[in-house]
Image (cartoon, rainbow, N blue to C red; front, side, top):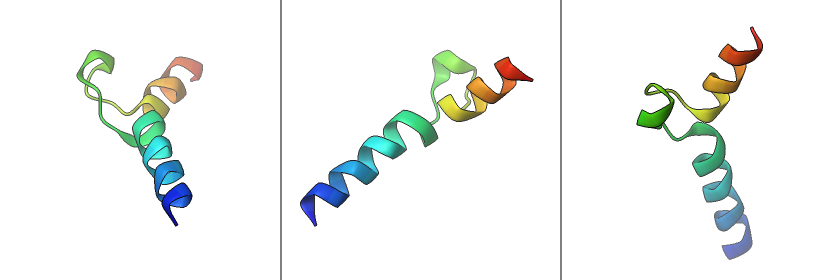
Length: 36
C-alpha cells in the first residue's frame, strides 16, 4: 500500500501538479503544447 501511494504521489508531482514556472500548466499540458 505504501509503495502504491508513493507511486501515485510521484505521478501527480511529475505530471498533474500545476507549476507557475510553466505558465500555470501541468507538466503534461506544457509538453503537449510544445509538441502541438
